[in-house]
Image 1 (tube, rainbow, N blue to C red):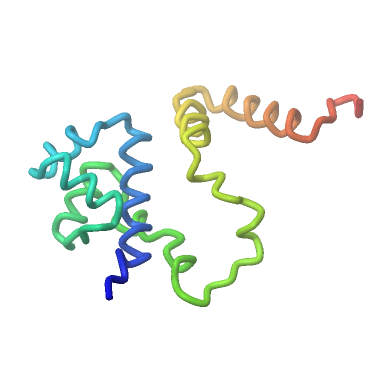
Image 2: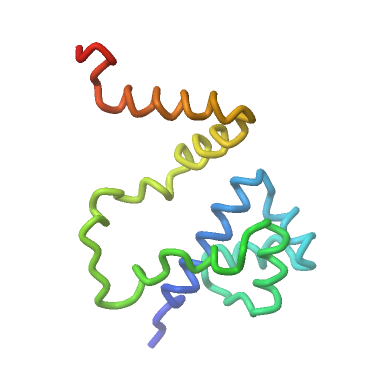
Length: 133
């Protein structure tokens, strides 16, 4: 009986993939930095191969995130977990468009402009302008 990859391994792999893409790295580039093939990176990202602790530490350094980053939200993958807000996000943070938007937002170097962009996004998302129309 084959169970498939552990849900935590899948979650960690998804976090690796999201961060790699956010940094604009290919699987080949990440593999080169880690001393593995791009096929191995693919297996890590799918969760079919587990990432050893030393490699995970090296990966966190390469991707410029703390090791804990890979486990953020992992509790939601555990059997029996129920989150009342889960249906609200509906995978929004897994979408390429979300990653691109966040990446572009943080490339805005002036914090005042970033704040205005955030204000504009909030305004547009409510469908009401500053005059209540």
